[in-house]
Length: 116
Length: 116
Image (cartoon, rainbow over all chains, first blue to last red; front, side, top):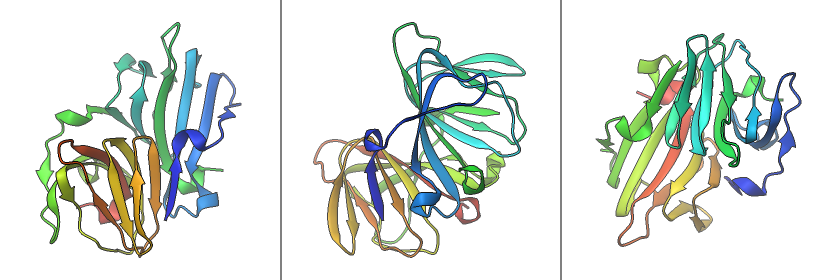
């Protein structure tokens, strides 16, 4: 059994192309011997965003704090804390923080094979 | 892409033996075609608890609200919002709400094969 307080886990900048002002904390991953899926905490600074991209595995997302705009091929949808999202494999998606002043935070889970 | 607000998903009582005053909302499961893992929201009424039990798959847990006591073979540990837990396969565990007045809420994820 492993217990962590999420903000004690170090944040790393997300260096993907077209990511802006995003950090990630790997809460549970291969280093914890998580068997099936990995849990990560993403933080978007004001105006920050992930890249618009797609990949062959799903995301399950929980919005924890702040406003988040979810971009897909169908446009942009506003998300709030307590909203959850299943992004299916191969779906285009991008998470943006539209706030000029507040951080946005969300949990994003992926199959363990896709977590470095 | 599926978006839900977690409290819009109906809560069902947990009918496992030795569970007390626990409900579950299946946020993403087989009905959503979640490929790898299922996301559930558990709510413990004041004094409520899950059974002390073990099973051959892991849990990944995020405490969202309230105080939670996590029971294992090593005793009882207090958890607070923003704490996360990896319960390994076959580890004994129980979640209890020690509060006399407040609900406790946590997300618990499992491999999809174990979600009915």
